Length: 200
Image (cartoon, rainbow, N blue to C red; front, side, top):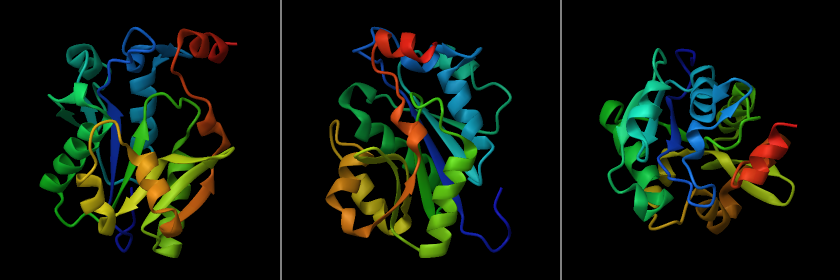
C-alpha cells in the first residue's frame, strides 16, 4: 500500500479473454500450483497499488472463484469479445467510480507469470520520481505491459477501440514514456507450446 503522501494508484488486471489461440481461457491454466489469474491478482495485491480491479468476461464463475479472499474488485466486461480495449475501458471506469481522483493506473495481464510485485513497484516508483505520463516495461525490443498510465492519459485510454491495447497506445506516445527493464515480462503464454515450455 502507498504512504499517505504517495499518489493514488489503481491496478487493472485484464482477465476477460477467451484465448482463441490457446483454445481455452489462459487465465485458468495452472503454473506452479496456481492459476494464472490467481498469481497475477496476488502480484497486484502485493504491490503498491491502492485499489485493484480484475476484469472478467469468459469463464466468469470459475475465474471469480480463483479470486476468493483477495482484496480486489471484480468488473464484468459483457463486451469482451470485441477486444482488449473494451476490458481496459471497463476496468478504468470501475476504478474511477470508486476513486474519481485516481492519479495513475497500472495495467497488467494474466499471461506473464514471472512478473513480480517488485516489478510493478518499479513502475510506480519511476512514475513518482519522474511524473512521466507513461511508464512501461521493456523486454528485448518490446516496450509494453505491465505499464503505468497517469491520469493525463485516461482520455486516450477511453478512446481505445477493438484489439488496440495498451502497447499500441505506448507506441503512439513513445516520446512521453519512461521505461523500466522487466526482462521476465517477455515470457508469456499464447499457445499450448508456450505452456509446455513454461513448465520446463
